[in-house]
Length: 169
Image (cartoon, rainbow, N blue to C red; front, top):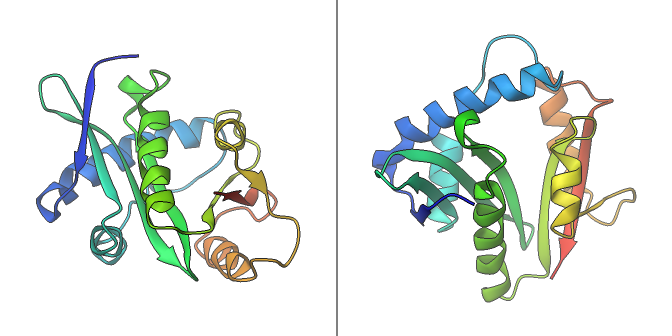
């Protein structure tokens, strides 16, 4: 694992977060998980993560941003909305460190667990989250996750590839 620092992100970091997300989009494109022009999080999403105190940034030893995670509170759960690591830094444990940190925040707040949506077919998505303890949501126990999946499909993501997952704390 490479040396990296994780700190709380600020609004001033938004351009760097978008640059990371834009670069990571190409990894998803190569895996067939996305197509079309690269899409990145807007100010409203990033501010929601920031206001929930769930926007963390990973930086390399020189202080350059290399990854981030953003989450918010949704129906009393921690919902991870975005996790991106710049392609030059992927597969070095940075995403795992970011996720463990954000999940620890949810546990510390006494939340029942965490949720997310992801691509079910890309080899590095659902299996990665499963290695952290997430499992697919196949029932209606968290119906608001279906609304998130529907919104993703409305944005152009393939419904056959989308998967909701949950982790109980």
